[in-house]
Structure formats: structure tokens, C-alpha cells
Image 1 (cartoon, rainbow, N blue to C red):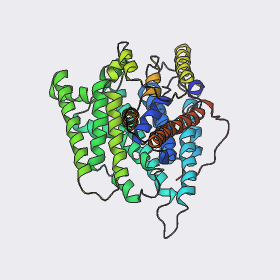
Image 2 (image 1 turned 90 degrees about the vertical axis):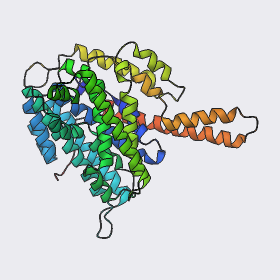
Image 3 (image 1 turned 120 degrees about the vertical axis):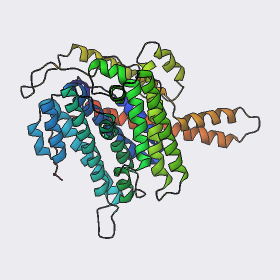
Image 4 (image 1 turned 135 degrees about the vertical axis):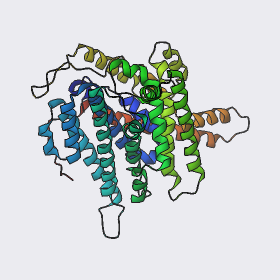
Length: 417
């Protein structure tokens, strides 16, 4: 998908999305799941920009209806700029279903662990997310600020973590039973706690930026409007709820469970990544945050940094020059662009070391300075570390080809569900 030329008004966040997913699972054995989830997150980011800043309410309704039907023939009802994304959504899920069929096999009477239900649950998660986006678009169109009790159920879905949790299980192999997907889709307390962390940290940190550009009311506005509380008190209350959600996650890890630990850790790691991404995001949106970013950099393998940084700069400049016009089938109205500022995150994400990687690097550094050590063990540890980083670099390179070079001239073959 050539994001920069086909959709110049959306955020181009390849590196950020991949960084996010590496934090969810870094192990080489989850390569297939990691690549699929990164593509889904890129598409989710694009769709989010449709609903947040660019599409008209009529266009957004058309896209939601088309996604509900999940059929390539629905593409003819969409404006040109939406066709690009809709086609790729169907392509990505269809491609993953084929890959999963090879891994898990075709469904049989004795084998329910087929590729079919993995992808069906992932599709339903995407549909659920877009339905929540549409509700928020309608609220924004009416200038409506809902009460907290009305806002939170929809906001936990629009945060994206229910959808991402379900998607994270796809590609993890036979350990993921249909019961796991049912558990995730039922909004169990453990999964709900992760969604609360995501939604409330996002609402607190991003509030001022999003309200300046025109955005649906966040939890901050809903609390302030309903209870007449000052901003500081509301922020303290939401942070307290985030702390309680972390406690729920910890309890969930300590209690006996029917699901294997790798399943639970996907949910925990999604929550950890929100903390990494949003804890200091407000600083990183300002020039003074650059010093914090540079301090966090480490000497990890380069991930095509020069090309990526150049691409981010070029895309941003192109978006400034673009008039954001679409084809004749798109309403000719004034629109906004999500590409407001050059990204200063690119270099940070390319060089950030995950918790597991940082721990491994620290131990290796400590071990190599010891007087008595096993040189073969040291060499093996360094080789293993570099192998994992090299694997990640290869994945990012492959995904970047998908984002920047894919052609939209061919028509895929899809069947509705």
C-alpha cells in the first residue's frame, strides 16, 4: 500500500506500528503473527484517520456498511480514497487466512483448530472497532458530549485493544483454541483492564492536542462536563482508574487460569506498550522532548533508519503541499489532514530496546566484564541477541515494501462471509 501517494492526508506510522507489535511479542517463533498484526495496526491507523479527521459522516457510514458485509463488490459504493484502504483490508485478512490454512490445516470434523475461526474472530474485531468509530463520528458531528456511563463502553472498543487482543492471537498456532477467542471477545475483566489502561492513558495524554484539531469528547471532557470537576481532579481520578486496572491485570496473572501463559502475556504486553508510548508522549510532541528521545536511544541494530527518517520527512512535506482533493465521487468539502507535524518518533522507535532486549543486553555486558566466564557461552548469547534483532530488521524491511510499494491495480478475489 503506497500510503504517501495514495493517502497523503493520513499518518504514515510504519515504524511506530512495528515497534508497538515487537513489544507484544518479540520471539522469532511469532514472526507470522507479528507481521499480520503490524499490517492490521497500519490499516487501523488509516481507518482511524478517516473517522477522526477526513471523512464526511455519509462516507464513514458507507465504509462501516461495506466492512460489515466484507465483500469486494461493496467497493463500488465507496469514494476513491476509501477504496484503497478497503481493498487492502480484505487483502491482508485473506492472505493471512491462506497462510494459517497451511499452518493449521483445513477444518475437519475432528479438528476445530483450523484457520477459519482464527480469521473470523479477527474480522469481527475489526468490524466492532469500526462500529465504535462511527458512533464517535456521529457524536462529533452533533457536538454531543455523552455521559461517562454512555462514553466508556463505546470508548473501550474504539481504543482498539479489544480488536488488537483478538488479532494478536492469530498466528500463534494451535495453542489458541476457539475458547480463547470467545474469552477475548466477551470482554473478560482481564482484557477489559487492558482496554481501560489504553483508553484512559490516551485520553489524558492526548486530550489537548486532539481537542485543538477537533475531536470527539474524551473521558476528560465527559467527566468535567458531567460532574463539574476541574481538569486536575479529573486527571487524578482517571490515573487512579489506570492503577486499579493494573492491579486487575496482576491479579489475573496470579489466579489459576484455563489459558496458557503466552496467551495472557499478549494482553499484558499490549498494556505495557501503552505505558511506553503514552507515558511521555506529551513531551515528545514538543521540541524539548527530543532530548528525552535521544537519551533513550541505544546502540541496537539499525532498521533502515536513514531511509525511514527521509521517508517520514518527505511524506510530511508532501502532505503540506497536498490540497487533499479526491475524485469526483468524493464530496468537495474542506477537509483536515492527520499529518500535522514532522515525526520525531522515527529515530526513537528504530533504536528503542524492548524490556526483554534491554535485559539481555545488560546481562551480556555484565557477563563479558567478569574475570571468570565461559567464552563459548558469551559468544552464543551475543549471537542469539543479534539473530533476533536481525530477524526483526528483516520483518520491518518486508513490511515496508508492503506499505510503500504495493500496487492497487489488481483486483483480488474475495468471497463475502
